Image 1 (tube, rainbow, N blue to C red):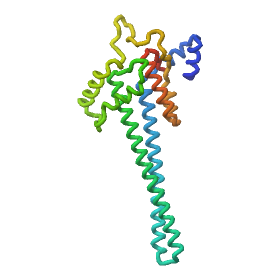
Image 2: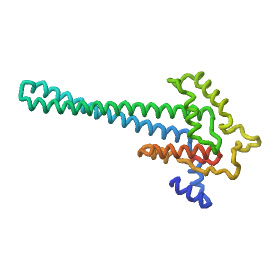
Image 3: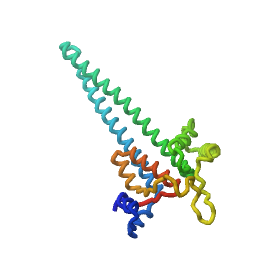
Image 4: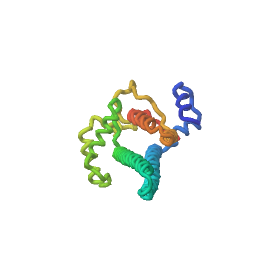
Amino acid sequence: MKLKDILAKAAKGEALTDEEKKFLTEHDPDKAANDAAAAARRKAEDKAAELEKDRDAIKVKLDEMQAKLDSASNAGKTDLEKAQGQITGLAKQLSDLQTKIQASEKEKSTMIRSQTISELRRKAGIQFVEGLDHGMLERSFSSAFEGVDQLTDENVIKAKVDTWKAMNKAAILDMSGGGGGQPPHVPGGPGSSAEALSLNGKDLLSMALTGDIKEAEATLAKAAKADSAGKLTIVD
């Protein structure tokens, strides 16, 4: 059973089986998001580990060539020049790899920080109104934490979140409900352009594990928009 097949049936207006309905309802959205985020972090960590492995291998070669150079210092000048040339090349490779490792570590740190801030927003119950630029609002929320190196002080976090909410009331979906068990009001009404979406955590995790991080992020963005419109269904 695959999500796309169920979505295809739903799009055609075909009735879903009990098994398919169960598939669409029995899912933990937080676990799906956390699993996808963890997979992305593991991919970044594996990339950094591979770069460090290459760096260590070059260091070994560099040490070997330095030893050859030292032992050949009294031999023919040609051998000495060859060894020196090899050392220069290896040193350049080592420098380039170190630069890549630093960039990889920065990318990993940025990813983890972004995921942490997104989780803070979810815990605060902040969902964006449909029709607005959710990417821009996400960046705006993240910018509220600029200068905060450690996102562990609950008092600081609460102050930042409360300030952002106060300044962006019009962009936040009202989740208080309209009474009588009715869903929260979403601008646009029945004619809303948001597409109904069923989100499968396993599909997201598969995208992340196979390197389709951008596709996973795009799917999550669509899910946030559908969720704001009350059109998101979580599946297993």
